Amino acid sequence: MNYPNGIKKEIQNKTINYKNRGMRLEDDLNITNKYYIENKIAYIYKKPTPIKVVKASYNKSGGRVITEAYYSEPSTTDYNGIYKGNYIDFEAKETKNKQGFPIANIHSHQIEHIRNIEKENGICFLIVRFTSLDKTFLLEAKYFLNYLDNIKKSNISINYFEEYGHLIKNKLLKRVDYLEIIDKIWRNYEKK
Amino acid sequence: MNYPNGIKKEIQNKTINYKNRGMRLEDDLNITNKYYIENKIAYIYKKPTPIKVVKASYNKSGGRVITEAYYSEPSTTDYNGIYKGNYIDFEAKETKNKQGFPIANIHSHQIEHIRNIEKENGICFLIVRFTSLDKTFLLEAKYFLNYLDNIKKSNISINYFEEYGHLIKNKLLKRVDYLEIIDKIWRNYEKK
Image 1 (cartoon, rainbow over the protein chains, first blue to last red):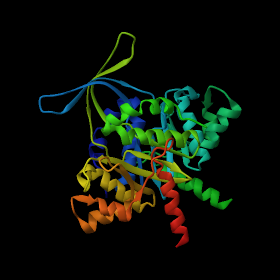
Image 2 (image 1 turned 90 degrees about the vertical axis):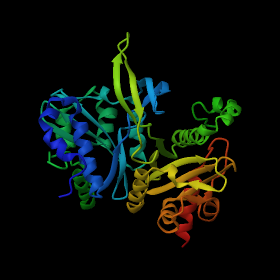
Image 3 (image 1 turned 135 degrees about the vertical axis):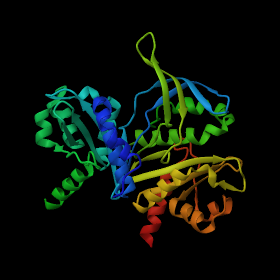
Image 4 (image 1 turned 120 degrees about the vertical axis):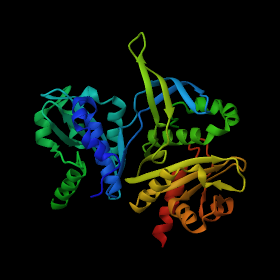
């Protein structure tokens, strides 16, 4: 079997990772994306975190060291890439909330970006993990935007995810196999 | 006319920008991409520079300050996004060299990424500016890879760019209007 780099280490460290709940979805997505890349399924990457560098200097060996910098707000979603020739774009979030997902977790710039990608016919969605329920959903951008524009509550209820979203199965190698859901959505469109 | 944010300032500061040659192509691309985004033409962004954070603390007002960090090597190209429903991916580089473009300017991970995107039928290319000649070319990934695989020299000669690349015109608002070239390439394919 083709193990992505570092996956064995990740599996060994699973107990440790479980403690660090805030990082889990991102870790799982990194492992999944590595699996996709190394098996030539899709080329989807997390964008680096935007950081504004204020001060940098050179260390003894001539390398650059950043000594003052700040995290800045992303202008787009965190993940994008290509799958079967299609542009893929998504944002991933975790919440401890059991009733719903607080929309405030998505910055206004990101919402505007999601609208743009949806209009441009990109494959755009959210991946939301409810950590307390141990459930991870894919919600297509059109349903996310419909909620924003028509239902207008500050939380997207878990019921909305159950009805309009797709539950993503946990797997060993493809931890969050969201492309399986994309394939399913495409098959459903073809049937119509 | 619809001016992208900050473009008037950019035009006023043109003299200053010209001095800072190393930054010019990136600045021009940022202005061009802003123009595309604000006019709903395309949604293409530069990825943030990857930075590995080693130490961070909280300042008096509770914000996070990064106090030790290092630049790390990018695993993909710097720019990607969507245009007319198509996945777009490119790397942009400047060189002072008049004879050719040193391939060493593109990291091996980036070359592998370009191969992957090309196979996946993404629209993939390089934008190379020869600062001493004041010429900027778009070179499609297939011609770049052909050079690597068959010609195998360490520099891509200016003649190769003249023959297989496309000269990008300088414009006031769309400083590096590379999508005009993509449209031209598509029209040529349709004719065949």
